[in-house]
Length: 155
Ligand SMILES: [Zn+2]
Image 1 (cartoon, rainbow, N blue to C red):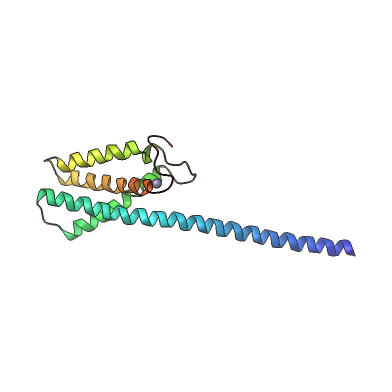
Image 2 (image 1 turned 120 degrees about the vertical axis):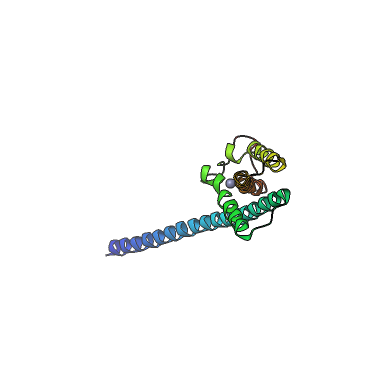
């Protein structure tokens, strides 16, 4: 009799523990998803601003009119390429940042962007490449502001 009551209590306790474990698991993963989404949202927002800025600078240097549709496209492209570093090196562990997230990669891209914006050959294809580089760079700049920062070359 007492053994049956004890087994029943044990089963109920196990069920409660299972529910707690499941709830804890769901909450932790929702928290991780929220952090990831907020980072993704920030990267996309800053990437769109970077794409727009590169487009604006390019138009000023070429002394061409600022076309709203092209500016919108530049923002979308900048936003899309701002998430590429985390696609190449997904944030699935604390040391995921490696060569594609490195200071060397960022420095090379800044050099490329400055040289291209200074060059006399500012074709539309080059403009697209500059916007892509701008979006990618915005990701590295944003990641550099985190406590973990960026590695010099490898994580
Ligand atoms: Zn990143």
